[in-house]
Amino acid sequence: MTDVAEIKRGSVIEHNGKVWVVRDVDKSAPTSRGGQWVFRFKLDSVPAGQKTDLSMRGGEPITQADLVRRPVQLSYKEGESYIFMDNEDYTQFTLSPEQVGDLALYFTEGLEGIQLLVVNDEAVGLQLPAVVELEIVDTPPYLRGASATGRGKPARLSTGLEIQVPEYLENGVRVRVSTETGEYMTRA
Picture 1: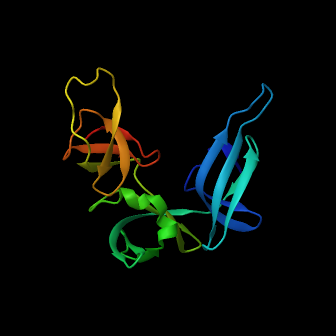
Picture 2: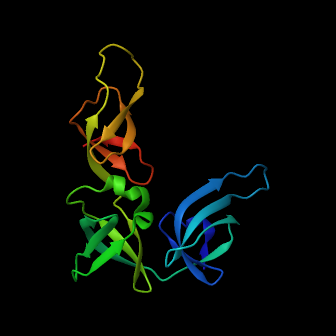
């Protein structure tokens, strides 16, 4: 048993006799002194097909499922599906767009550090490295002296991801982006 506060996006849990992948976690602060954190999870069933929401209070126990993480790399995209190859034994795994979700916005050629999540010999999801490097392909030009503040401006990156970046960055600059929050971290 694990404390509910330790469950993160990508974790695999058992609930009501089924195995679920945590797609999103939202936590709410207590509204009074004696209150507890409330965790809301968006869950996808394994195998895929069902979706549900689960709310639990901080400190409640939850069972994590047996999960194997395998290092993989993206081989190619076939139709809408993504084909990943195991780095150790070259086994291929197919993931649907629903299983990959918004993580596809971080895929670049040669991206290393991708972990495939396997439960009961079935691929259920991915875990990306904490930070990826992407190139800015479209952002408004920098206006010198326009502002002395550290405001941001929108930028579209090479994968189609749109984020806020500092005003002084221009097209062609490589930036480091957090895969967990989707925010600009620093120049690469």
